[in-house]
Image (tube, rainbow, N blue to C red):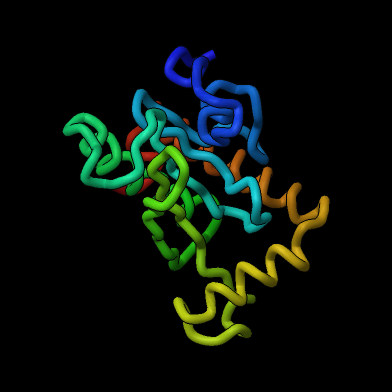
Length: 167
């Protein structure tokens, strides 16, 4: 159990995930001393990952220099893994500062079926509503968990063989 999250209130989802008291589909994708990366737990879109800070802060400007350096390395690695392991051609990034405790970066893949909802990012509320209403099935959650596992394996391969993902 992570000591930084051990004393956090039970209502803090990120602390629950970091401490291992709650799991995300497919498990932890990658983590370091500052961030925890996991499949979104509310939307069953394969490759929709959250990069969450381990400690409580909400704004990008509250990052330490070490956190900022880690973030600058980690996010491109995850994005390359999305592209290589899942075939994600385009993605959207949302920095969420209005959370209760943790800074979040949402990395939402633009998938071909989303084109039916119109040009993005204007279509994203409809896309997310569709995913909540129609994709909350065991098959979709299995696909999301499988994508998380594939991302984890791609990142592990890159860690042991830096040539495994393009720099």
